[in-house]
Image (cartoon, rainbow, N blue to C red):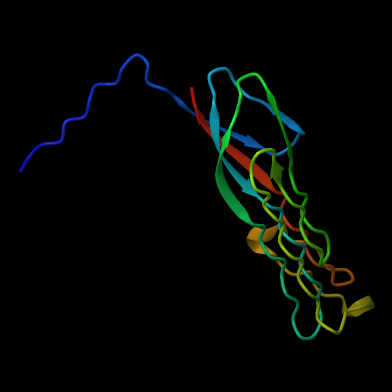
Amino acid sequence: MGQSVFPAPSAASKTRYVETLSSGTSWTVPAGVTYVNATLIGAGGGGGAGGTPPPIPGFSGQVITTNVATTPGNTVAYAIGAGGGFATAGGDTTFTGATTAVGGDGGHSGSFYYTGDQAQPGINAGNFGWQAGGGGGQGSYGGDGQIVLEYWK
């Protein structure tokens, strides 16, 4: 059985970098970077409120990974989708040159809403956003989108 031999690292080997974009509107391509692996995450939809039947939580946003050709020194426009409010869809996440990651649909509420002293806690959207309080049976908000860039230089 043969033995695998790996070449010694050369002085020209590249280092991997990962950047997370969660705010802003443009990214400047670092020197020596001619492409990036971009992972786009659409924002989560907001959850429905209390009621009967039980409410449905918001859905998570779409996740897309793609390679994008870049030019060092240029700026790339992007937009981060905002989490959906009460029972509304989350926003889309975009990165110029990549496919758009669509935000998740909002959840649906039950047909009966709690009011006054019947108020119940809002639902827990778990990974889709943060847990909202009760009051009028308000649902929870979806999590914001995100972009993760991976590149070598």
